[in-house]
Every structure is written in C-alpha cells, then in structure tokens.
Length: 190
Image 1 (cartoon, rainbow, N blue to C red):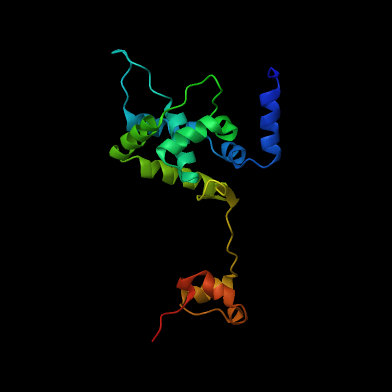
Image 2 (cartoon, rainbow, N blue to C red):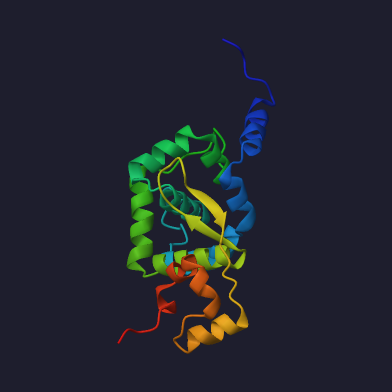
C-alpha cells in the first residue's frame, strides 16, 4: 500500500474543480455567513454552561440542508454522501479528521428550524440570493443537481404593452413558442 503524499488531496480537489464541480460555483456565489444571524435567532441555543457536547455550527448544518435539497437526499443518504464525497466535504469545509453530523442530527436541526418557522424564510433568502446573482437552483437526482444561469425574458416595450392590455403581440403570431412561454400572455376567452 502506498503512503499518501502531502498534496494528494489538493490534487484531487483540483481535478474536481477542473471537471466543473457545481458546489465550487455555489460556494463562490453565496455568502453563507450572512445566514448566521437568522439561524441563531431561530435556534436559540443555550450558552453551554450546563455542559454536554457542543452543537454543530449552524451554518454548516444549513449548508447540509442545502445539499440535501439540491440532491434530494434522505437524512441517511445525506450522512453517507458527506462521508463518501470529496466535493461535499469541500463544500462543507470538512477535513477527514472532522466529525460528520449523523442522520438524526440533520433531522433534528431541520425540525428545530421548522418548529421555529424559519426554514421557509431561510430557503427563500437562499433562492433570492441565487436569483440576485442571476442563477436558479435546480434540484433533482444526485447526478444532475446544478446551479444554472436563469433565462432572461426579453419582450419589447410594445409587446409588454400589448400583454398588459390582454392582447397577443402582433410579432408573436409567427413565433408560437412565445405563446407557450407564458399562459398569462393569452387573453381571456369569450
């Protein structure tokens, strides 16, 4: 068995980046620290004076929920994927020596946010942040979760005016795809 070198992990991370790791792009787009105040308010954790194991960092746990949502993973599958995938570990800033939250910890964290009524607000803020940067989060199977550029609708001022009046713009008659783009573009029937 070959002893690992000092730069083996760095080389693997570099290869992942060269192959287009979408989590690198996501980490660059989102300042996850901006979610810390909302997370702290929702969780209302103790000061630790009573002892016990300290909780995992709330930003780390929120990033885990983001991964879980993007890749449609169960709690058990999330724990497994974090332990198994270098890209997940890098996104979460975890090294091999760091502890990984187990499935029950992930479930409890989500439950605390849900009971506090904060989970929808946090994910709405996450989506708004992505949209503000011109991207949409596309969740799905683990093989195709990605961050993609949001399509931009470019109607002319005349087309916008016709749509506001409930009319179909004249230029759209030759472009049936424009009619399918937005059902609200169709005027109400008789």
